[in-house]
Image (cartoon, rainbow, N blue to C red; front, side, top):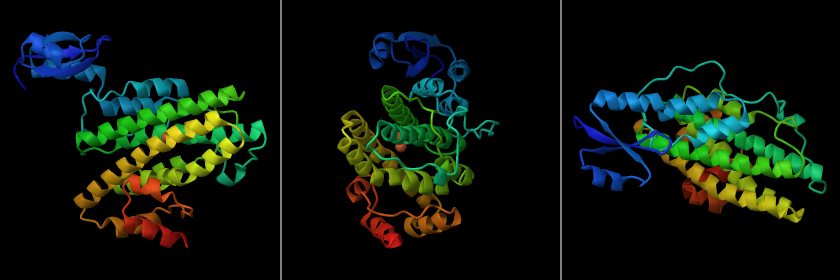
Length: 314
Ligand SMILES: [Fe+2]
Ligand SMILES: [Fe+2]
């Protein structure tokens, strides 16, 4: 770190990028043209400016604690990749994780009944359950971001992007739900996704194996079926939303696969045998076909893993 440098600020005054000792016109070219440029005298002054804006992991935790969906979505939008990433800071878990609104009422999965697509109410119930999955998915991405220290910066950047995309999915579904005359919270929902986050809160490898690589990957299998149901019922707008979600979710599972393999290598574990052990130890749901093998391959599952998945489902 040079003894003095340029610091670029966004139009809203947030620290954006350190430009080093380059002269001012070059520094200005290196960042967005509407950034303000500030001269910073010392490393400690620079750190103070960044910390006052909040680090990525702290801001993720703040967003996780927010109960109101609209405020949570707004806080997730603030998780810029340009924020300082304090990879090695161990953050203590505060009370109140995860922040979620008082509604929907959370009930056991067997009490959430599938409804016919033939009625607008049935379609709204399906969209509501998908919105609930996406709301949970926002919290899951935020949780892995703040909870696990000591990973490379790209780990945190990847999950910040996932959180932003989950917030986008939630917004799309919530908007569609409103168009159908309902809002998020109107119907009961179950808590299966967050329960797995709870179970794996002390074990990154288990979290990666069982949340993105199992529960989110199950979404890849379900998407074409759900999409066809909605299109068949004439709700083409909802079907188009599912197309966007499937496209992005392939990326999320790919992120899960990437960091699962990274962590397996770090722990000198075989990815396939360790996965089977974790699924048993943490009582993962047994997945049933049909599997979306094309999407799963695109998300980075190997042929050997897909064979093991299909064997297990028989
Ligand atoms: Fe999503
Ligand atoms: Fe996702």
